[in-house]
Picture 1 (spheres, helix red, strand yellow):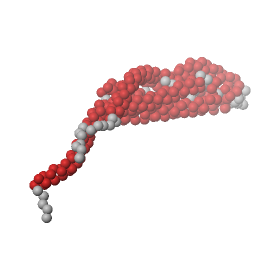
Picture 2: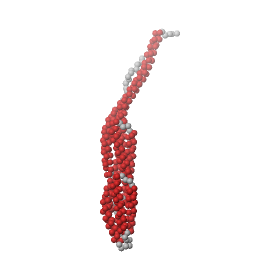
Picture 3: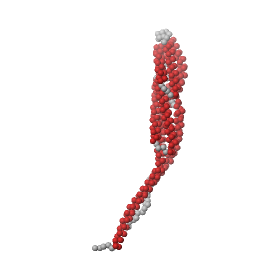
Picture 4: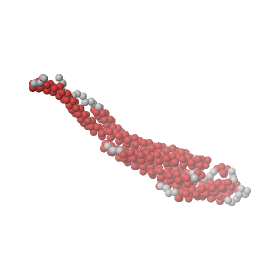
Amino acid sequence: MSTLSYREYLDFVEKYNKNSIPFVKVISSLLVVALVAFVFSTSISNYNNKKIEPAVLQSKYFENVNAGYFKSKQAMADLFDSFQIAGVKTEKLDSLKESSQSVQAPGFFLTLGETQKVLSQIKLAEESILTEREELKKQVVPQVYETLNNQVVEYLNQSETFLTSLQSTQEQLKDLTLAAGPNLYLPTLSDETIWQTQDLEKIKAYYENQKKEAEAATLSYTKIQTKDQLKTYKDHELTYFQLVINVSDNIIKVLGKTTNEDPQSATNIEEAYQVLVGAKRENEQLAQQLLDARVNLTSSQVYFENISSLKNRQRVIESGLVEGNKVQLKNVTKVTQSNLLNKIPIVGNYFTPLQSN
């Protein structure tokens, strides 16, 4: 039986250590390198992310406020366009005056339709303003955009106040138009085709009906509460209704002296027509006053000061948006550079593992 000497034992241990220990060191070295690389890359990434975080927040805010503002502006522009169209149509119809008996009812319903369109545009604009305000409340406002944010908020508040007042005015105008009815929509005092018949009873019946409608319209008008903007228009209409009542009374009184069978009927019809001719001169002046008042209310003229103020705010905001675009160009550069840095790989070994024999 052979035995190992002490010297051989030492040689064996030395040989074993040389073969096994380097392998353990290699594994340990790799683990250390991986850990250091992970910590280093994580630190770099966190550092870069913290650098670009304000830029990302700024970009997100700017994108949202820019889109929301222009949606609100477009809604207001559509409303102003509706005013212009309604004003042009109203002016064209009203300018026909006494010759427009044939378009009384069509003009009445056209005006109602245009007023309803304006009210619909007001509602859409209000919804857009409300949506934008709610979106702004959710935004984290970067310090660099605090002034812009305040300007947009003030613009939305002023727009909402204007729209609320405008809606009230247009609703009252609609109520007044309905109260007048189609036969009294335009300031006319006669239907020439009735006079051409020379039928005393038909003429009398026409003015009896006109008087009844004017009295009903007057009663309805007095019950409708209106804003100061509508006072002039309302007063002119009441003056017109009273003129219709007075003319109708006088014509009916003259025609009541005879009947169609009376030889004097033709003379009385001529006398009644002269009453109408005299009243027409007064009505022409009143018609122009009504035309001016109605066009103001159905177009944007009466709201010129409010609209000009809103447009001035728009110019200030859009100037701020131009400056904001410059900030965003700088932010894009920062984010791009940071993304490139985050993608740089860690290469090379920080520790050289021991080689086995």
